[in-house]
Length: 93
Image (cartoon, rainbow, N blue to C red):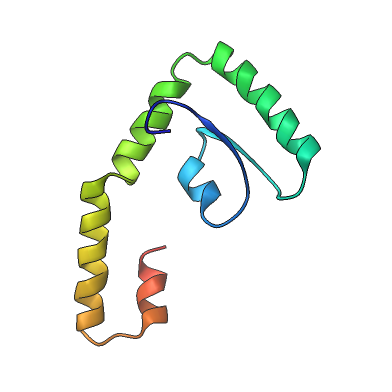
């Protein structure tokens, strides 16, 4: 996505969060759905000329190195304040 390639992926981990509306997410172990998602993605790319730019912008805005460092600093500051890991995790979802 950082290179302007919208994604088609299976729904594992944080895939939905990362891809957002800039791709297609299907259940794991569903090859027919994955194939259909690739077909939809090809159509979307032809219809929506800005999709590639939005995919790139999404990663730059939400997953840049600066964002990762800032989030890591925030988590470490909270951890140093003595809060439980589960309470901390709820704040950063």
